[in-house]
Amino acid sequence: MGPAEDFIGMGNFLKIFADKVFLKAVGNSFIIVALSLAIQLPLAMVLALMVGRKIRGRGFYRTVFFMPYVLSEAITAVMFRILYNPEASRGFINAVFQALGLETQAWLGNTKLVLFSIFMVLTWKYIGFHMLLYITGLQNIPRDIEEAALIDGVTKRQMITHITLPLVMGTVRTSVYLSVLGSLQVFAIVWIMTKGGPVNASEILSTYMYRFSFVRFQLGYGAAIAIMMLIIALIFSIIYRGFMRRTEYIA
Amino acid sequence: MSDDSAKKRTRLKERITGVLKYAILTIALILILTPIVIIVFGGLKTRGEFMTIPYIPPIPPRLQNILRILSMQDFWYMMRNSLVVTISATVGIVVVSSMSAFVFSRMNFKGKAVLFQFFTLGLMFPATVAILPIFIIVRQIGLQNNLIGVILVLTTFQISMSTVILRNFFMNIPSELQDAACIDGCNTIGFFWRILIPLARPSLAAVAALAVVNTWNDLLVALVLIDNEKLWTLQLGTMQFQGQYGQDLSLVSAFLILAAIPAVVFYIFAQRHIVSGLTAGSIKG
Image (cartoon, rainbow over all chains, first blue to last red):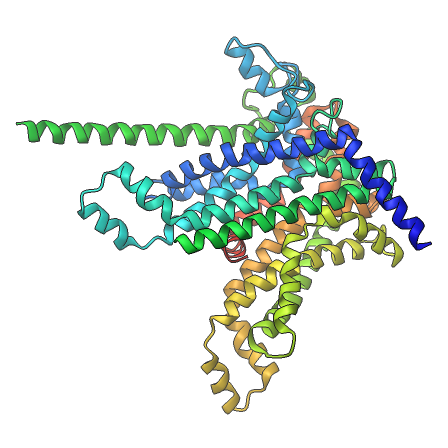
């Protein structure tokens, strides 16, 4: 029994690396991770820098920006399925496009657009969470450091690039870590909005794993995909820990 | 002269950045709020109005879609199931993780460090990756299609994070307090119940608020473990509802409004606790 089982297991792993759709799912997952790091987190930082300061109504801004985080992924996904409706008479986003004289789009039906459309939803939902982390990080910066810098005649821009940002690097690292792990785990939003389609254009690791495990009931192959997900997460964690240790020495 | 004009220039600059700041914030505000507002508008219209005038405010608001959903028995089953799962899992998470955090912060025994490392491994093991073995185990112990199965899985997956948060908090309580309590004749369990738990109330609230949000919003675990319609949670129901009534977008919007109300109300009342739970969890975990 033992050797035969091992053999099948290896078979699944050999199959997985020849599976074009699997490789596509890995690629798409990485694209979502990369977009989150390159677009979502910087935007969250901009919001945090503005809302974290003394401005009128900052409590209100924070409450609103964080609100999507508490709405479930299921509700968010169904909401945006309606808003992304390809007909301008039913889907608000296309209605706005039409009003601006732009061409309407099949946001979830176009293989070239679909991943970007999903990423926009993820940004809508999670930007407030990262903003919140940054605000907490900013608040932990001792006041007197900034005051001392001001006395030394530092400009506002210098203050942000040379003092504020280096001091919130710890928080940034945390949010990068959470963002990567979170992006690798996204499931409900993609599954409800597109089921990984059209023609696997928005297939990501979690939807592919779910399809094989619970729709086609090929548990062995599903498990092989799950193990790959775990390995990717582990590799990232190890890199992250190594990186953390190195930068801590420098700091 | 030149000094004066420089001052003027910086003042002008400041004013421009101020205006720019509010412009950016307003755009962000519009981008975040518009999707919600449009769905709320849609849910308060008749199907016919939704087809002809989908985006203008619903004046007067039509409650027929809302009432239709409120009269569906299935909707109330979903609400009840979600409440049962969320309350049970939250109680489970708070009880188990406060005790384990106590052990990890206040007691010394062989292998404690290794055991704690093992606990924090759970932070890296998201339910998505482990869902297949979870499914197999739950089926083997006969808890498939049973809310107890969902509750146990959701509880287990949040114990790691909650334990780490509470352990950090417990470690900040000075050990002199325990020594003093011991002298006054308080044993370990008495110290835990009468001193530590009351002191830890804010972090217990944070952990509980986080647990509520995470369990209430779960889709995957319920999706994998529950087939029986009567046992669907609200999230599972939301997904199925749009599959079933996908053509009637005003009805689906009305369903979304009702399905979102519990979370939004909870958010309004527990915002502070959710936020402190999230930041404590992410920054220390």
